[in-house]
Image (cartoon, rainbow, N blue to C red; front, side):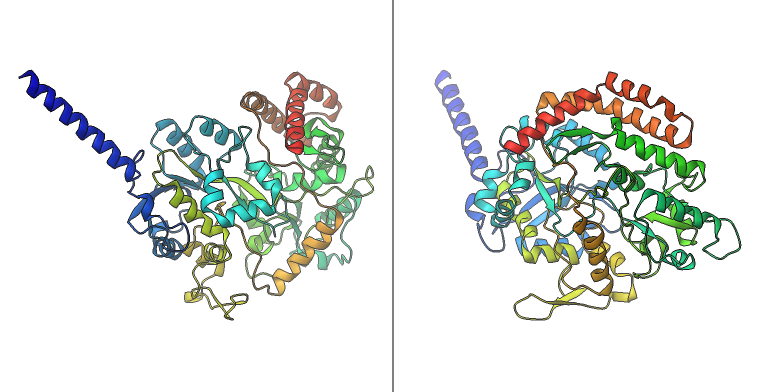
Amino acid sequence: MKVVASALAVMMTITVLSGCVSKKENGNAAGSSGSSKESSLNKEGFPIVNKPLTLSIMAPDMGIQNWKDMPVMQEMEKLTGIKIEYRNAPRDSFDTKKNLVFASGDYPDIFFASKLTQAEEQNYGSQGILIPLEKLIDEYAPNIKKVLADKPDIRKSITAPDGHIYSLPRIEPYQPWYRNPMWYNGKMLKELNVTKLPETTDELYDLLKRARDEDPNKNGKKDEIPLSSSSGIKLRDIRTWILGAFGAYEEELYVDDKDKVHYTPAEEAYKGYVTYLNKLWADNLLDHESFSQTDDQKKAKIKNDQVLLFSDWHAYMSHGGKPNTEDLMFSPIRSDKLSAPVIARNKGFSTGTFAISKSNRSPEASIRWVDYMYSTEGEMLFNKGPEGILWKYTDSSKSQIEYLPVPNGEDRETYRSKITPNFGIASPMVVPDEPVKDEFAKWVENESKTKLLDRGARVPFPALFLTDAESAEVAALRSDLTTYVAQMEAKFITGQESLDGWDKYVQTLKKMGSDRFQEIYQKAYDRWKNS
């Protein structure tokens, strides 16, 4: 009996080991979303895999169309041979769902457009939950590899202190705006006979005052609102542009031309900004509902031609109707303390848009899948949808396109939102320049060039990693500092707190650790600069 038992034990051991080997050969060491022998992966060309492979992705969903029904995702499945299982969550609650997923241990194969913070990348990367991508990029992702070689600052910014890359960026080389621009209501400017836009804070004040008093919407009522914001934005749309008039590039951190890092809320530039907005508030030039109204309520006022100056991606998106060149882009102004305004520009990329979890059994196929989005063909597919729906190439070299009529006569952007997930979220890709520029697009490009880029706009602060210790300390400091700054900003602007209390406010910031906050980022910046 002992001999039989021993034989059975040996046979069971062999069976178990055989099963382990089989799983390893089939790429089943982790996860359960499909099988992929190494030989089934094509390193080049399409399809990416020769045998069925399913990958699960988690992404923020705009709620407009199920991703599985989007022509772009259907085209990707046909092209690559990879089937996608969607584990999406509504965009508004996505961060909460993402945190729950990380805590649960039940990870998707891919985090897509997931706004991973650099602290999350470092935390979950060091735990092995997110896998390093740099070797996969070198071997399987020629498009991504080329982009990062061409843009070494981006590679620096996505490389964690441990030397690994845990996520991919969304690259937007043709988008110069740090925040949505502000726009002047063109009809109101015309009624006020404005031929030259304000260049100083005093000139802007005078124009806002005229909008308040001279009935430029010609309805016989004193209902004009010179400048407006909303509670969800909390003056963020105004803050960037007015801060620049007093010398600060950004509302929290910026680095000057001498590589010195500044914590903005404790600086004289910030005092100048809140003092100026307090003056606008006191004279009823800043909408008194800015801290309470919704964005939709603000837009209703804009659409009703009540607001002279407001922020949006494009003015017509607030006004309604079609794109037009009537509403002029705000031209950054300066205070009497500066010879020229400082102007913030976009970094040209955002981080944390694509990551692979340890549950993924085919990282090679996954990186090849996303690499297509960084190619010329993939950019067009994800940005405009499949050829033949909203656009088509007009020449064999595929260098020119023309737009096609929108099916059912719908709005082009609304229709685009139904055919590609690249709408309202930061998808991993290179966003191409507009391949066909109509007169409006050319006009906006020129407005951006002459009012921002030609006047020295620059990136306020690079994307960079903190060490684990720095990240933990900054998180604790930022939580209290940000809350206090927001409270005091509202009080200073609305007059609930006298600006005579500014020095006390700065001392409170210092007690809360503002100097230490600045010091940490100075060290991190110096590290990034010299890396």
